[in-house]
Each structure stands twice: as C-alpha cells, then as structure tokens.
Length: 155
Image 1 (tube, rainbow, N blue to C red):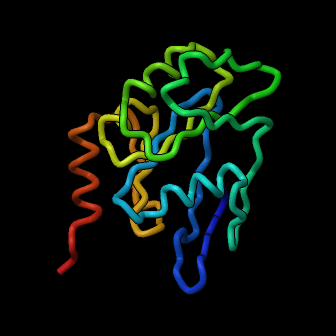
Image 2: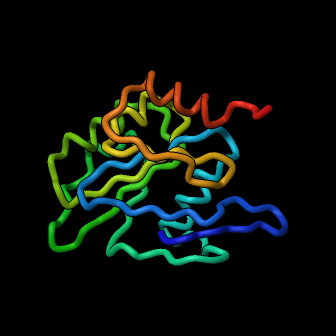
C-alpha cells in the first residue's frame, strides 16, 4: 500500500498510509477501536477501494476463521498467498498458522490485543487513521506501553 487514504463521506478512516508486507512474514496492525484497522485490511485485500493511493494485489487472499487455520493446506510457493484476519483476539490462532513452516505464506492481522501483536514479526501502530509507528521483535508489555504513548491525550 502506498499513500492510501480512505474517506467515508467527510470522515477520513485512513490518511496516507504506506506499508509493505514481507513474503512469508507475519505483520500485525494494532490500534485502539476506530483507528482504521479494519479499513486498512479491507483496502489491502481489495474489498474496498481506497479514496487515494495505490494497493498492490496478491495472487490469492485467504480469509478463513482463525480457528480453522491449522487445517489450511501449505501455501504453494509458485502462488504466494496472503492470509488475513480482522480483529484477532487470540494469539494461539496466530501461533498455529506461524507453525505451518511455509515461507510463501504472508500473514496480515489486525488486533487490539498486545499479546497477538507480540507474536508477529512486525507490528504497525495505527492511530486515528495514520501509521504512527513500526516495531519489530517486541513484547506485549512494550507494545502496550507504546500504544499508551501514542494515544495519550495531548496537553
């Protein structure tokens, strides 16, 4: 996604968000309710068209219920796929798909749970429709602390 914005009438859900996903990587988008996480996922998967910006397409996008991830077949290296889940609350589901040991599978999840985000390779912080920070290899406590900083009321 490059400089993606999404408006719903006068309300701006995303504002010039640029992200890239690493093939075979696990990326979590975390933020408070209303931050634009579901809209980001909808634009990334082509379910919604952005108001501005560019979104690259994947060969195959899989959006099953995370409780079924352990029954997914391994990804075909000739056809990379993006596995997505919106509002994932359980880190166990994310650990299951990560255990499939397939470098072709790319995972993108949105969550409000720091424990889920901590299981990812990359954590994107979305606040008020803007990409506010990116962290790698962090704990749930570090994620909670950073999110609190990013969402604290300003004087």
